[in-house]
Image (cartoon, rainbow, N blue to C red):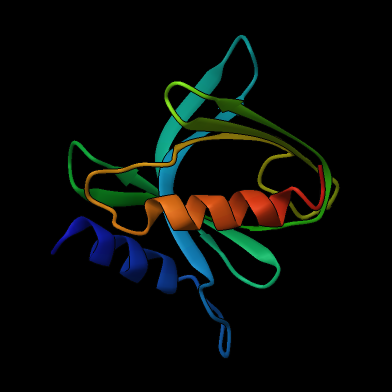
Amino acid sequence: MDFEKQMIISLSALLKKKEHLQLAFYGKLHVGSISRPHEYYCFFGLTESDLLIVCYSPLFHKNGFTVRVPLLIDQVKIKKKIMSEKYSLCFRLNNAERPFGKFKIVVKSEHPKLKSQRENVAAFISYIEKYA
């Protein structure tokens, strides 16, 4: 199975009835504190109101944990590194039912195995900029 197909299947498994996956992309998720940081490679998907996250291990070619995060955003900071076309999005959520309150997504606008990475990252950034 190719990488893009695996990403779509993994994220689609988290969808509720009559819910659609609007876009999907690949990046890194940073959670934890400064003293105990955790970094995961993940598939990210956006629905009408939630961010879907599927942890993916490129080394073992399998999925790990899955998280559905309601996008009730308190604060978001978006930084772009011009030379590498890498985006860093730092989120702080205000909803009570959250797996984590603060997290960061680091994503490159290009990925060799994903044709739609550039378009999907741009669409996600423009969606999130409403909250910035």
